Image (cartoon, rainbow, N blue to C red; front, side):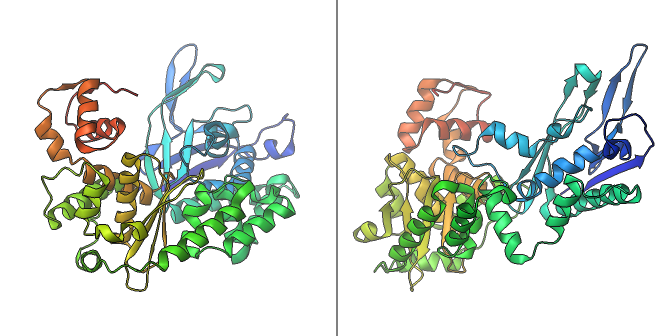
Length: 439
């Protein structure tokens, strides 16, 4: 993964509205590894020049980073729940412009790393065109350290000019002084999509109460999918389901032995490849490389669950919340799956995602599958897609470079999955040059 660097040189400016702006002007260049995020073409009258540093006051940038600190570190994107415009306001550097040119840099936490994505954007009003693009990935600890160093530098610059008690300085002081319990609270609030310091006492109490109802390993996935208004109720529902799954009276010795014998997923730079590889490994181990798991019962049989135990092992979880699957084990390490799905196709996909979590997590802790965009959830989604509709089998089925809607629908019927899954498999594995989709 790449490193993040803020490089700047202070300059003196006069005549600006605030002393914070006036005393924090600098030439700022932002680098991600060898790539310059701030590289731009200056659209001057006589010639166009490529430059790497933008000239602007750093106070608005620091203020925006501090105000969105916890969200920038911990708030991933959850499909169906997260509002894209609200999320962008907290996660796109363009909202720190304050009248000056800055690139369109999207900052998205994805578990243990942070995705930085930028692309060409022309700002006519500023006579500036930012060039280059991502995405790049940064280790979250390295990302936090780079932001901290930048904010410290702006803070110290203000202090040197006898500027104190600004909104940024007060925010940064509060962040630097948090203890471990406060940090966990701010992290939970941020993952809910909230500003930690703007919550009412009742909302704060609800978050704290919810944290006491569920195991700590579930915090990240739970709060990313939960909603603030119902967070305590949702946590109570999770706790009740965990207890029910932990009390199932099922043996499933073959599945437990498989969990103990199979190796973890192969490490790649992308979670999708890790999920794909694990699906192929598991199909090989189960001796079903050429099998089509068309129905839910086919899948249950393939993973060595006794059909007589299914009523206990696979529960229907009727909920409007943004959870897909909850996995918990009994005292014999047998998994139970609570699936929040309606159609059989969605149940199969959700069960597969939960199966991946069970087989690759050996500490016995409950696991939650959601629509969150993190490495973990990307990995189990890729596994489920490849396990249910293997790319090698699709290549045998598809002889043309163009796949129309009827073919996508027919393949979806054949493998018992959604047309969207088939289309994504074809595109992600470069099986055809063009795919028409019925959605």
